[in-house]
Image (cartoon, rainbow, N blue to C red):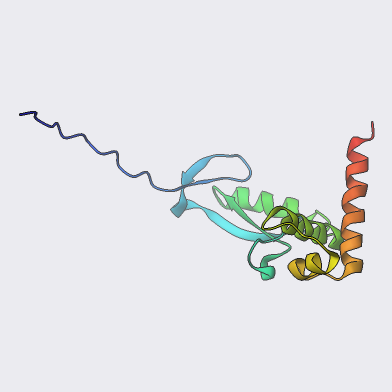
Length: 129
């Protein structure tokens, strides 16, 4: 008969976090996390978190630097609306009408048009030499 050797099972690695500032990895239990305001962030399932971004740092000093960077970033409503539109257009079935897009995003047609105009203007500036 064949003898089976016991293979040492690899210990399940503890979940790691990644510092948003320095990209260091560290155990989840050591993470410093919080939310900062960010108009480019739309949450896929909870509208309450729209405009908030969860950030993770390896320590309080790095968290303070991240928070300070976001504090100086302007909050632009059209950018938030554009993030919501992008999320609606990239997740789930295709959107066929303004009404359907409005239902998925919670935005009125005027807000949708402003979001699209803001997005298109940003694209135009990125491609200009």
